[in-house]
Length: 254
Image 1 (cartoon, rainbow, N blue to C red):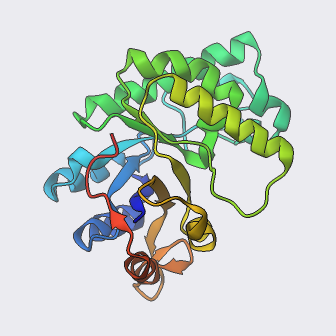
Image 2: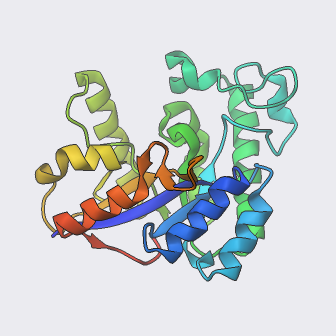
């Protein structure tokens, strides 16, 4: 039997998403969520979590590509922010900057990551799990300043880079294998596998029984009022997990 953690990404990005994630907890469609502390509806998200009893299942969704940063220093670097000071995701779209940033850029990045960690901890949320928007923490240039902060701030668990897939280039596969090995060597908890619902649906027969798999979902309400994981009905996903006999792990990822 496969054991599955279903994490709702993007908590705090909008009222729509906040309400959708809260309902998903009520309906046992997700087991954890991760918070974007720099987004306008982060305070509302934390309030909802505490009101509805899932505050122990809220980790940090490190965000370096959307909205405004919490610190000013990073705003002067065009690879991170536009002229209005908001994140522009330029570094995330460039292979070179995903692998390497200069000393000044790395220092500004470290300061922003630390500010987001402090903001997360200021809410009194106990989970201390970390993943990231657009998977930025799996970039070598981001992980370099992040790694020492994981222990400094007591992060207990962290998301792998995606390792459930049908086809992938050899270079990407090697990078992912090396990255996940480096994570595991830190001693911080990771699951055995990570991917999307579609990844698992296409590859679930390849995953060994009793392994622990994290699935990311992005709950939101469609115009019809139905809960979707981006474009896939959440009810469809719930039925899939039931049909495969997956054991949903309804506890903190850490």
